[in-house]
Figure 1 (cartoon, helix red, strand yellow):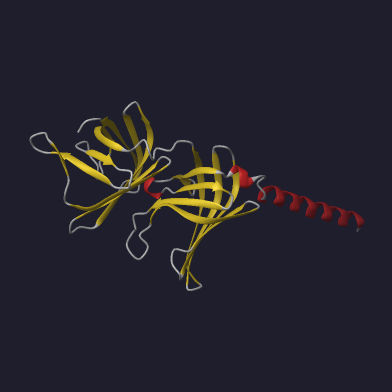
Figure 2 (cartoon, one colour):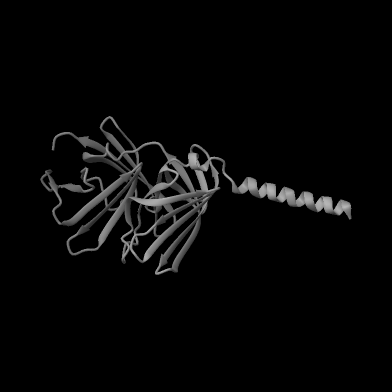
Length: 265
């Protein structure tokens, strides 16, 4: 009986030790500081339009940038650097936002591993309205640390020089002019080869957070449209975009664009 007790005690102690090792990330409040972008969702590479950027300037505050395609309804889901309250407890990060008096959004990240470059976690998104839970979404996420921020270097007028992969809303016959107030202007070359600013749009908005570029626009009398890119580089007057898209059959395809800075319009 004494042997059995000792064996059981050892098993309990070992189990607790393993649980503690798995559930605790040392110095998470320090390691999480910085900017992170989603790279994988449930073990698959994330589509560019499904990416979110998290920025932790401190362990008690976070900024979330996201733009989703299903923008219909009361939540426009267009959030450039929206501020959230952050709470870190062990390996669990909880972000809380109160977008309206009756709505609360809680994003929970149970971190399973974190290095200087990557972070893996179990994610739970909860929406509460009038103290009632109306939506819960859970998934496994992997984030990549972002070391570049192109929010300022993207400003100015750019002309497309190359388009590879599938064609979406943007094409090779385009100029884009980005302004510091979060708006942009879309230019096209007419039949006689002159560049003209498109004047049929009610609005043209964008934001850049780290490497993520999100755009949205609305033509008069039509539905709002959106497109997302990742800025691979901006250097020496050249800008490179990449994106992972999904085809109608469910397969994925890479898309790329190259741009040349226009110094004189």
